[in-house]
Image 1: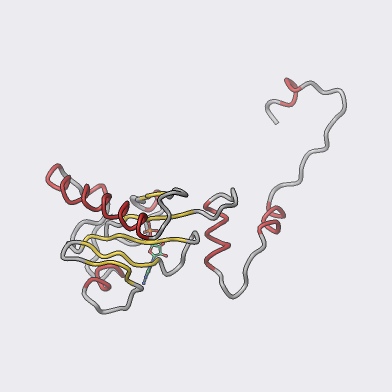
Image 2: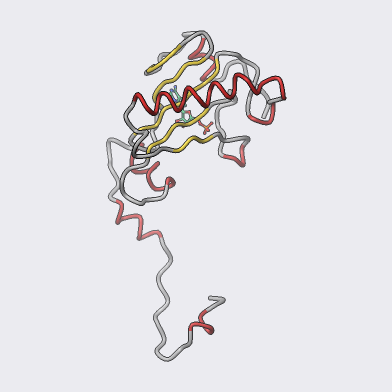
Length: 158
Ligand code: AMP
């Protein structure tokens, strides 16, 4: 993924568009994701421009990327989610789900329910029309009826 100097995070860094910042220093900015996939969804980005994704990293980037991870852990502690646990995530490229071409780290704390992130994204990103989790079941293909007397071996391969 090539670096686009007009990407949304570069514009946030330059102050051209607003963000819900929770931390910033000379090196990094952390702000709330505009379309949260979980109850806590924070993005940590480096101020340095030109690095689109992990694919652009080299050995010389090890110190600051390490500091970025430590910063995310510190923010998690300050947000009170260290104990409950959280997820740090970096998407790389279109097939990795990356949409913004400026390296960024997602800090996510799932809801206490065991819904997968895919469903949580729908659940938390549409405040106008919240989706009930059980309505997602409708999207599953209908279950095959259980046939009495079939061994579990015969069911393998369905
Ligand atoms: P990714 O899909 O890994 O590239 O992540 C990009 C993230 O940036 C998505 O979760 C978006 O919701 C988020 N995002 C896009 N625009 C903004 C914005 N203006 N402010 C905050 N988060 C944003």
